[in-house]
Length: 134
Image 1 (cartoon, rainbow, N blue to C red):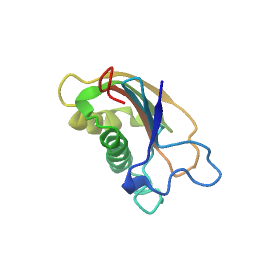
Image 2 (cartoon, rainbow, N blue to C red):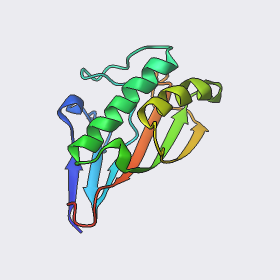
Image 3 (cartoon, one colour):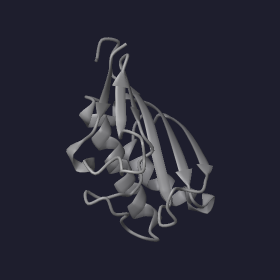
Image 4 (cartoon, rainbow, N blue to C red):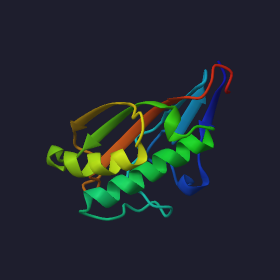
């Protein structure tokens, strides 16, 4: 199965030199995003301390990877959400619901220590575009 690395222009700083990963990958009709965080186009974490704003930026980054692979949020089958503090669930959930307003994907949400202390949320997605969508 051929695999294509997905690297949207808005995330061209990814991966950081010490982080061996790709922002996304496409193969077999599926798109897998790496865990995205609230990095802006300069590679800096935005909205320090603001879970709602970080969730919006994180989802913007997820959507950019999906679009690079030819998918939309309507193609997402599953998301995993990692919160630095599970008490931020409702705030994250409200922003998530704005992006996945209709027929949201399956989702798992857990509390986890994230890669940098300023990161409050990380989200990854799996989408299906087509059996022959490579």
